[in-house]
Image 1 (cartoon, chains in turn blue, purple):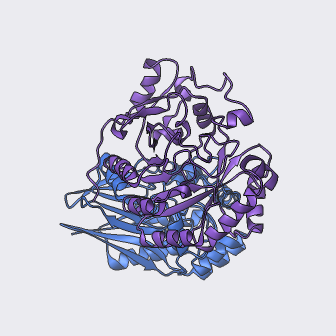
Image 2: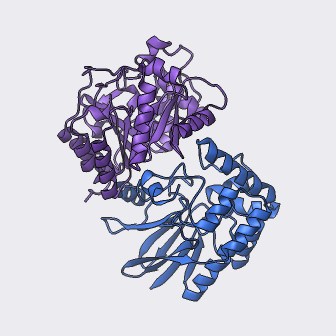
Image 3: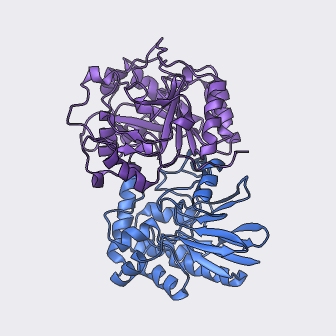
Length: 259
Length: 307
């Protein structure tokens, strides 16, 4: 049996990243991957990157990493709602301005995808979807047929992704698996302050467990306030409810949240 | 259970670029994948007669007729082997269709659904039924309500007197049932601050966190009489190959069906060359981007889809 742990969406949340790395170490894992989006949203982006680099956890390049690493104009989240767009830009400008040159180079050169062969299964790790880094694979908008096609086209028996910030998994009619690991940088819009990552066990079967991780969110909230990041972001950390970047949420997922 | 996906007849990107050179003066747009199937369930039948309607729908208009529940089931079944991701229901006005709710229930078994409506025909019974449907379904059900700008005068000039107020009533009712409608706004001018004003107007109307989708005007259908049709310069003729990104156009990921056949996209169902075939399987090849509307899509990168 091989144990694969995967997380994504760090969003500059250094205390959550530390807590997740400790949790993985406590449970044990044969392989550990970060699926990208290391910066954004939280304070002092270099701190999380330093922890991640020191941990030697292999990391993929998310759309945010690509944007920050290459100093693009925006984070490529594609918001049109003026409120979401403003918040996304505040967060992005802050992150680009405070990420060191060396870390930007590291981000820009991260791989976009990685293929693993585990227990006779082709495991494909990506950020958004195998065909587009910034594609959202929401649980309620991804039909079985579409996911089967993605897996077929990209030669995967197990597809592991992030980008949406909400964790979910599905065993497809063909027996393939799709796992969205969620995010560890902000709560899962469920009114809880914990963050989530995924632990997979692969042998003759594939078992997926999502693990909630508690961390010192109050310390993070204070750091965000000290950095004068928007109060709306801090509210999300303290309450577990998303307050911004809600535009892309499908109705089904959005109804579960407060806003 | 869905049948296994097919890899049939989707042009790889490199082939698509080559097709520009081989195919003459207009780009040949490949279908990269069937992400969205547009189902013009109400045909061209509508309770309104908007002066900018790109398919010239209106009361009593049966040029494209209502699709039956069986027609829709057939089209959905045709699309499933191609790994279709989601379904859009449009018209005309879908809420004029007597079997809309049954059709949505059927289709939600296979994938996420979105209904595009003018928001004037909601009833408490229908909204309650929609809410029950979406609570039961594994996939999301999105309701998109059309509004033309933030001003009553502008909207009513296009959709008829009193329609702005009726649409706002519809949006409020839809929101009250927790259906989280997406407000689809046709951008009629380039005035700055447009989205901000619109969000503010919707907040005043009682929608706390409105979801917004802004689309450009298309010089098609009745709009050509309200303003004008495409100018000769608005064309993709002789577009340099390096300026053509097939993935930027929504027809790289969609097809549309009416009771009269399969079309390249929901915009061109009434336009010369827009119809591709009778069956979806025969409409998966490249499409030549000859139309002025293709120019609008190329320039704006717009998609009729939600995302």
